[in-house]
Length: 118
Image 1 (cartoon, rainbow, N blue to C red):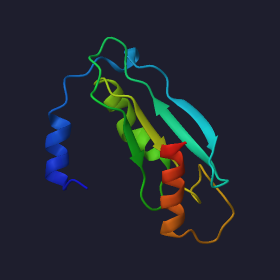
Image 2: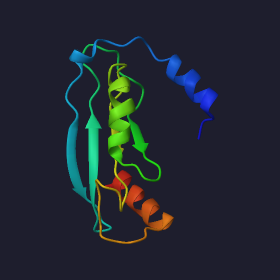
Image 3: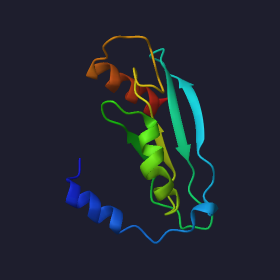
């Protein structure tokens, strides 16, 4: 991962944004993975009239969070700058509950891999 100063520099280098009202609505859905998990998937299309970003962005949250934190803080920001972004809720989070008391890192990796390949 990028250290905080490098991330701040990267974000500051993004082009100036359009007003938020030009932003398309956030899309919320669930996808059934080959692992059997139904994973929450948020997609924020790039705003119309903004030069397209070079690639889509995929957000993967940390502990005690879900896709919601990416939508709340970053997805709209990137949309306004021409990037389509995606955020997923990992197994065991509020967006992708599975009833397990514990989730191992290997299960998160398997779910992420199934999402990217699916």
